[in-house]
Image 1 (tube, helix red, strand yellow):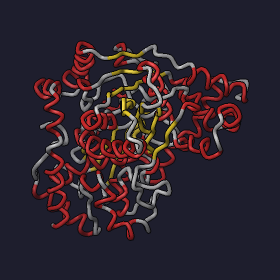
Image 2: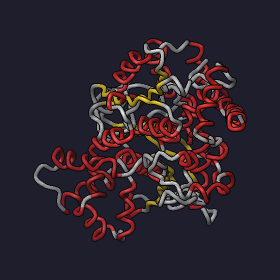
Image 3: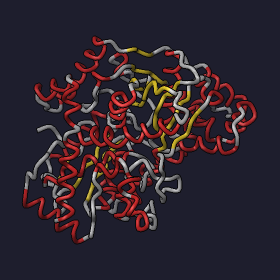
Image 4: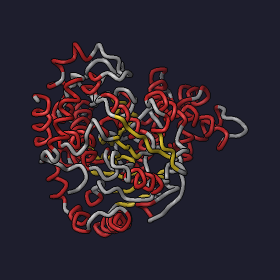
Length: 490
């Protein structure tokens, strides 16, 4: 069976222990349908939920694992929080609309949703025993934080596996949430060193009490984003399109574990939009079968995730990490904001809003700009994307980028140069409008990771070519929701 696709109780003894374990903590689990449409399903609970601290290990925060949290992260928003970037910020006429992931609870990042989608099917089936197993969360930073948060709410022990070169803020958070510092496994390298993460997980998997929840291969990650993030993005577009005159042209997202980009499959079906996969130019795996190192933290690379539906992608877009590093300085320093205010016409609230964008969000925005230029989009066109996390996760990276790129200082002139180069000068180079042959090439590249290295069977690998396979995964949503219903009743 493919990872995370359990649709029945596999181990009844473990299942009963899970029931007893959560009953003792008076935990109720939200269904996927509730997270997909919280204004309809979760609103009756909000009197209790609103009193819970969104940053605490409070089990009520399970009912905040969705896109409809207001900016205070306490109230329920009718429309997911988002920012519409216009030509003053992007240099293109098309509207670039960014949904805000930092409204999610506990980790200020939407990866807590992915973690929930990966763990819950294992919990419901008894594959994961909450009284015995340690949940191992391999990540380049945010997914393991989401996993640690969900695990702690459920009273489970967890292990975070991430590269030692990730931002200090990630490690600070983990140290605060994990009681045992030995539950943080630092692997060699930085963002691009995913293979080293897998190697560490192979070692951990030798321990019978460790269950690996690999976001790059867990279909629960794909399913929950297509089922929850997709409809949330559709609501954002419908809200922006109040006039009815706008067209959703594309959803663009860094590939990462290929969970978030699954929202594009929903949007393509619902709105007819295209899908653009963004990756770091310094490590152009999808573009050129390339390799390298980069600093767009959180997007992973050097391989094609098993859960990436590459046969449904329309574009691959390369973005240099110097652009996201530079824009981080423009958006989050006094000199940069002064430039945006004086010369780009942004108001105080608009410049403040830029603090909602972390490094991968800035890369997504640049990728959206490149797509808009390539397609020659106009003011009736919309490109949708997400901000996985906010700038507060990269405060140390500001100083690193300043020393790396602007050793002699970052002033208003340098801010203008950086904005001009990264945004106004963003070109349509290092982009591929994918043909069938291009998609096959990218798909085939995944063979070496998943079949040769990670032991996926060839039949399981090849069935992913067919869109019927991906569409069929959605049949699990009502099955899992029924399992959650039964579990809650038990």
